[in-house]
Image 1 (tube, rainbow over the protein chains, first blue to last red):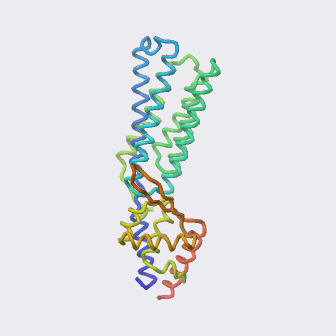
Image 2 (cartoon, chains in turn orange, blue):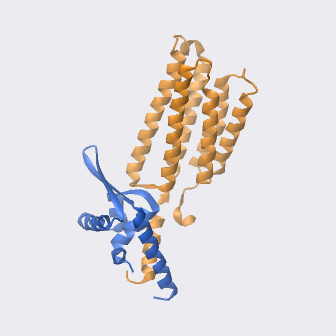
Image 3 (tube, rainbow over the protein chains, first blue to last red):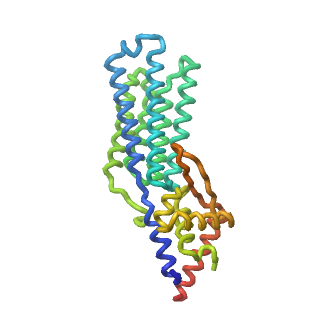
Amino acid sequence: MNSSRDQIEAIASVINNTRENLKPLSINFIFWGCLVIVMSLFNYAFPSLIESTQYGDVLFWTVLPLIGMILTIYYNIKYRNKTGYETYLNRVIKIIWGVFNLSWIYIIALSFTIKSFHPVPPILFLLGMILIITGLIIKFKPITLGGIFLTIFTFYLNFNPGINLLLVNIIGVSLGMLVPGLSLFYSKPHNKSDE
Amino acid sequence: MNKLLFNPIRLKIMSSLINNSECDFNYLKKITESTQGNLSIQLKKLKEEKYINIKKKFINNYPKTSCSITEKGKIKFEEFFKNLITLKENGK
């Protein structure tokens, strides 16, 4: 490997070896989409069960998402260890969603202290923003559109305060996360050489 | 030309690290097609010149080494790559 051509080929071959695999991201979207929809449906169908105690609904909407967060973090670490590398794109996405998780904890903590503050609208708005950023970064339109839809939907909520927030969750998360997640899952993977 | 990057294993290591924010030892071993001992020596040389950072940790009682490129490493790799392109254009 002495000539410049051989060396350039070696560099290109190593770079092409890195696959920009977005499957784990889509699995995260599908998981969260399903979890929030199932939780919302369960709460909608059995409100007396969830609200049987004073803090029943608070525990339901805090403990289960926290378990979900731990599971997704565990899955993402496992996947990272399996591949043996982390691309810059994956690192950026990881940081963005890490910030979302911290913001979610902040909003939930705020809703505990301020009784009149409902956490669903700001969480959905933040989710919409994060989806738009993710969609633009990975250049995947369904996720960007899902984020735009969620943002408009959250804006609409301000003018219809009486709307059932469980139904809002179901519609918002279905179109904002589940559908784009499934769309990403079934899209063709690509590597760096395609760019 | 940068002699440190002229070595094919070191060049492959740097090419992988410029492309990723972090790479594990086993992944680098696979893409460089080198032995464990040889790879360790090449990584040590790159670290001594401050081209890369090496991080060691234990996962499930197994040691795990991961590497990332430094700012100096990025600059040197870019210079080396530009030189390669110039040489190629001159037909060498």
